[in-house]
Length: 144
Image 1 (spheres, rainbow, N blue to C red):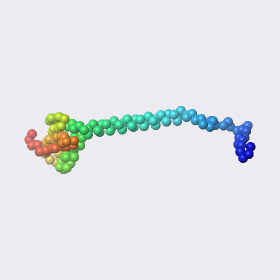
Image 2: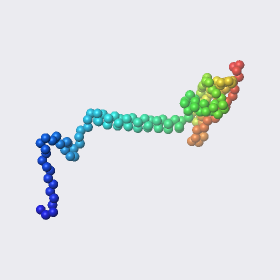
Image 3: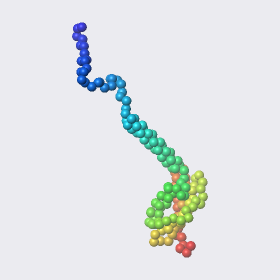
Image 4: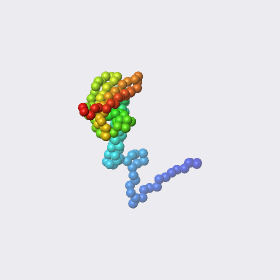
């Protein structure tokens, strides 16, 4: 044999520990490792499903007009009262005056700190693809 090199594996030491798994074969994961693997995958699946549900809910909510008692309507009303420097302490008689695909009309009586109560009539409507809000605020006579 000219120029060829031959590798020889030495015989195992009689007092040495047996060799590990054969090369190319995976060692079986322990029960804890399998549990953690499935747990991580389960969390990932739950996260993806929740993300999709929230995305779908936001998409549906953004296309439909809010109801008078919805979170979006309440936060819009709160913003309007803050802009007008009215410190609302409570609401009464929140009601839907009318509702259709293109317009929702609402009314609410708002108790204001250090002032007479006010009546807020507001509406959500479509203007093309956009949604708009209009409102009027008037003082309610105290003798009522």
